[in-house]
Image (cartoon, rainbow, N blue to C red):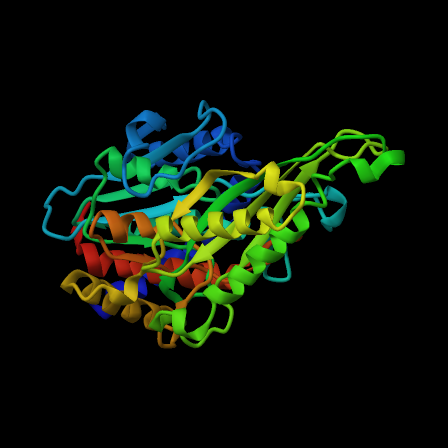
Length: 430
């Protein structure tokens, strides 16, 4: 790509940056938690339509994806699980195709009194935009869109097909991205601007979600010795799971991407509930667990060990050995993915082009990083033989209170994305 086009693209991003932050503020104001993404998707579809993209909007049908590799089991209806894809069709088809993927769903905001300002009333202050989902990952959706806008402002369009994906379900299953694959969306590479501080993600962990259901023996608290407390029965099981977590993190179990990390795999008891009355020994409890696995680690083998650990701990309990826990899998059934293991020409070329674009936008070499989270990149890398580059802006307190994303980082990511698109897809005149 010629230096003058790089400069023009950067100037175009600067010229449209105020509009970009206004767009991001509007998008962040939509409280698009799971099941509530419709208004945000309406907004996104309208913005793509105004720009002339071919719009595909559909409700995810579990029956169409439940037998595909990478599917995660779901609890509850999918009536509001809607994906939006806007497609640019190249006139010349002389360049490579690209998927620009991002997720519209955000995690719950938590207690409102623990936010400095309302989470869905975004504010800009001190060079940051604050609001739930502003960083994770609506800033990435904005950078994808406005990078394409910058090309158009320079009188160009990508010379390969580009599919702009706004998907749901990333925060709990990834089934939104899987539904895009099932619908036939493929490309030569994928860019996902998740908020990892302008680093290229070289590897990501897999994630398993499960629930443990326990039954106790209820009685009046005055006769607690004759009952069995289903909440307290969870404690030794949780300890046993943490012992398993420690074993999985042992040095001999770590792949090369994570050899330098003492504790890459994290187990989290994210939710626990049980009982019906304060003065009654609780008859039931349920606790929800998130456990990570390494790239290359078998989900089925991990599940088998999880079940063995829970049941062995239960058999050590006088009551539970006769009332064994039930384990229910729901949500993430995600394998790990390592871009670092992709030696294909397309992967090497895409990384080199992103590195050049990043250097042009930031003046620095692109940092590679293995992360301890998961993203939708796995669907493309593992099941579509497509290199998936995760590269997005700097954000802080994602999933926490006062989530924020750095404005100048968004600007740099948008410039780098525009240059990467022009290099990877080549350009054609509008």
